[in-house]
Structures are given as C-alpha cells and as structure tokens.
Length: 273
Image (cartoon, rainbow, N blue to C red; front, side, top):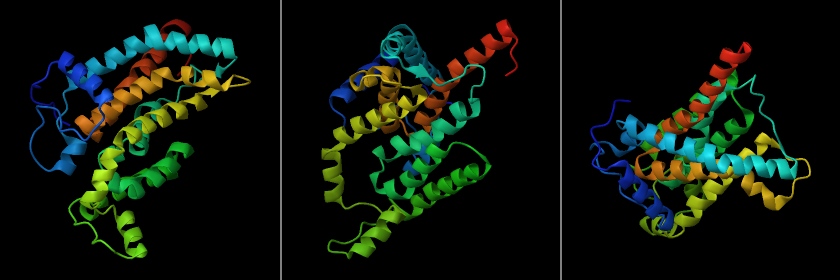
C-alpha cells in the first residue's frame, strides 16, 4: 500500500471524530483525504496514512500500558487468573500476520458490508479457532478468494426482488448479493448494537488468553479492557477508512509489544527466540 496523501484532518480532529462516533455509531462517510476510485478496491488497498496509524498505535500502547493494562493485571491477581502466554515462546506469526487478517474479517469486515457476512464470516471463524498451519493457510487463501468473488457477486449486483423464494434468498446470501434498500435501512438502525456487540465479542475472545481458575464472572470484563478499547478504535477505523487500514493498525498494535519482548529476551537473557 502506498502512503496516503496528506490528510485534511489533524490527529486531534480524528480523536474528536472517534469519540463522536462512539456516541452515535452510524454509516459514516470516509475520512477526508481518501482518494477517489473503486470503493471495493479502496476498502482494502487505499493509500494509508502511515504516520497517523502509528499515532493511533502509540496512543493505544500508552493507554494500555499506563491505565488499562495495570487494571487488568490487578484484577487477574485478585481473581486468581493466570496469563497463558509464555514470553519465551511468542507466536509472532500468529500475532502479527494471522490474527490481524482473520480477526478483522470475523469481527469488522461486515460492519460496512453486511451482505457479505455469510460469504466471509463462517470460514473466517473456523480459521480463527484453528490457528495457523499449512493447510489452514490454504484455507485462508480460499477465504481471500471468497472475498474477491464477493466483489463481483455482491454489491455490484441488484438486490433480489421482493417475494423471492427462500432458496433464492439463501443463494443470494451465499453470493454476498446486495441487500434491498429497506433491509439496509433496518441494518443501519440496529448498527450501534452490531458495532458494540462485535467489540464485546472481540474482547471476550481474548479471555482465552487466561487460565481463569475460579475467577468471579463479574471481573472478567476487566481482564480484557485493553482489547475492548483497541477493538473500538479498529471498528471505527474500519468504517471510516476501510478494512485494509484496520488490518494494518491491528498488525502494528500487536507487533510493537512482540518486538519489544523479543528484543528484551535477546538483550538480557540470551534466550533463543
């Protein structure tokens, strides 16, 4: 992806837009500065403002390290939860490459393209829970092919006429065929529930990173506060910039701590990584 042209919004302006979006999640126009062209292609491959993505990643690292991370650690100590991650055996490929692609397809791809949910989400969920290996990498390629096919079987086509039979509707859903205007209007009416529901589900997924032992259920949300905040930013970015931007920010966000841990291990302990 090429660097984006200079943005018309300062970082503080994007922050204001983000907080306004949290109060009023909606079908929003893209952020200023986006180039014109094929909407589907630009959703994935629009030129990215790399400096701006690094600013967002830096802000998330800072808040999580100074505020939300210590809260999660304290709650884990009180509740007896233990983190599963072994810092000497970090799955860096999964953290930096696999997870950003698959998790963004599961939780955020359909936020702006709901008609493609049956084309993309089921296979993405399967890949997410299986983790990366050779034959599943082939599965990811199949998923990418399904997403590519959805470009031609989805939004460019007209919606099915009213009164279509159930099997035609099922085939249309599998194709990712465009929804009728009335269906899209209902979707955007319930979009805040979809937006926050996807964020909560993303946070809940990361409870798997812990051995919860006998921890009280009402403390569980505190363990994943960092992931919930990150999920909100990624979901906003997906709607306002595109799925490609959210995947890249997700990879940057995961990659920073991974590279830091690997560097510290090599520098101080000499543990092979």
